Image 1 (tube, rainbow, N blue to C red):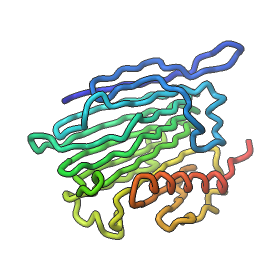
Image 2 (image 1 turned 180 degrees about the horizontal axis):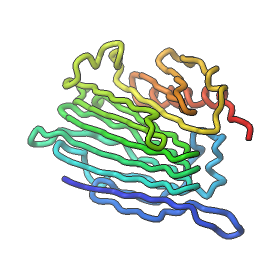
Image 3 (image 1 turned 90 degrees about the vertical axis):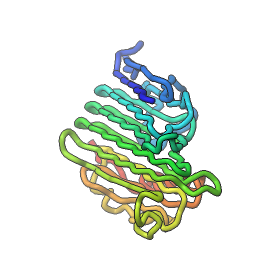
Image 4 (image 1 turned 45 degrees about the vertical axis):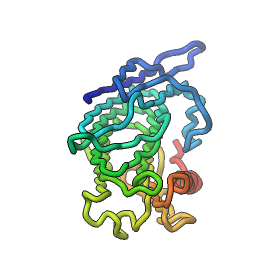
Length: 272
């Protein structure tokens, strides 16, 4: 299967002089279904105050099973200058093997415009036994753009040995790399169960935050939070990475959320 989805959000003037972020383009095929959504609770990083920005909200749903081996899916997101978008998934993504032993692939490209905000909170990817799933995400941030991006991976269903997943996330500030991470786990990735990768855990994830307003206070962040399997790592250029390992999806989400809470308590914005 070949499928493509496109999402664009733009800032427009609303009634009473209040600017609002509106969906300018919404196109989706087959397994990548995009639907307008409403707020279901507070987003992480309350300091961004997305509830008062006329934020656009979109949910991504699966219109078919998979991805299956041999599927090639493409997803493009464009957040226009000054706009704000919260993008979520309706459910987890289950990567399954196909009938011909081919890998499945999903390629996502994202542009976040000048002083725009993207909060992308997808649900976990589940690597079912026998799958060979490749995930590539490229994000370009223009000056003043803010980003919160979560990634979660579950190694097999309950009681099941996992398939193989290879994922790469590359985030650039303009044409300069800010974060570039590759991960390979499962039977096709030697050493994936070692202490340098999963340490035998079945759930792993990260949450990347980029906010140009943050200052030197980030240097005071603790490298490890209250749980030793969660780390809060300051990066260059006003970015922070929260990483966590866990035995299941519930514990993983809790540890990532705890890392973000620690980040909010410690990193104060620069006064303007």
